[in-house]
Length: 462
Image (cartoon, rainbow, N blue to C red; front, side):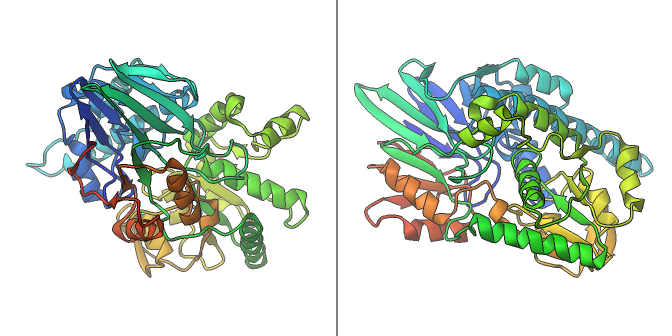
């Protein structure tokens, strides 16, 4: 058995890890690379392996950098089953159809512009909604904790990852040439004691471990510090009379931001502010989250039983039509707008930023990891001039980075999980830039053989 790292190697996004043996191939995740637009376009246009050579896909969770290339895989010839938890399968329906819709609209826009220029090739989306529907028909939902066979002599078990709704770490066990072996793929690991969903389960013992390292060397602030920082941001905006714009991923981060704002309001630490959720996808996700109580923690289920609203379903104003979104541009006073995308690369948040960035009264709140080359990263770096839709803007608004909202495990939690797994034949660190991966490796036990693979590198699982 061997695994080849075709994505998220010395970078955070584009998860693709191909497990191959004498009985066939299993692909762990099939995500899109997210970063500089030209690089993303080049890397996402073609798969680095033959789609038809993949027998089975096992998906850790629904985030686009883990699932977003699935319709392209199917379009390119993959006909096998796609195994995921029930919640992940439901989220993928909403998220992949949304991704296809955005790609089709972007291609239509670019082709209209290029139509005025001779010799320009027609822009095609990576995939369309028909490709997504075909892919969705290949999903095979699997519950947590119950082994299922993906190939003769190869079984997989999903365990709670505590990252987002439905996220799992993946335990793979096989028999080959009379010997047994095992591998655990962490997917994206969550944090203990976070609201709404259950805590991550300990990684099971295995021969080999593939672990994410997004926040290697970094420690997240505790909940009290995070709430204090958010309280300070809100009061600052109120004093200036400015608005608050939060670019946030539709799954996970949006729900946590709403939860934190609700906590502060109920404690009378901030006044009740209008909260607008301006993302058709996030609104769909809210409904999907509400129906999967099997992944909620005990506190959330108890609150729902008491008739409370821990998911913020009644607290936010959901904007669905473009006209409703546009009206916020003229709305006076302080209010909160949460909109996708989380890295500010697409979606309605760009329109809100366009009307926000040049006014020093306003504040942009960054609540998650920002990949190199994205507008979100340029905001974090406070680049004096940024471009939105190709138009230059001077960054005068406040920018606040609240990494405490991250759904990823920090360095101490990653080390604890790796130690619990205790991979006797080695560990590979993925989903991290080189600096963060090196920091995580430095924190692991000296006796744990650890590698930081490059893209295309193969690890023989002896």
